[in-house]
Length: 123
Image (tube, rainbow, N blue to C red; front, side, top):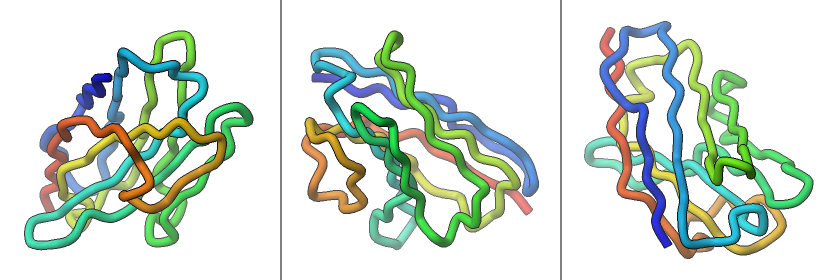
């Protein structure tokens, strides 16, 4: 199983980025997907999750509706659209997958992880 995250980069505050995570080696449609992030000196934190099947979503309360998670089962990919980026969003963003049908917000509930992509938001 492989998860490959991409799309990170340097952006100014107020800007937009779209992260992608392409997977292989798993039955994508049967997996719940999640995005987590880890800022320097901080613990990894939940960002968003989208379930298998119904595609239900869950977001970290702190995001205030700025991020949107989506999935494309035909492309075995999950996406994270990030709007109105703030310097506090600077972190390495990780995608994760778990073969369960419901959203998951805890990192240790995910079995598979990508390598992370760095997002840097300048003020």
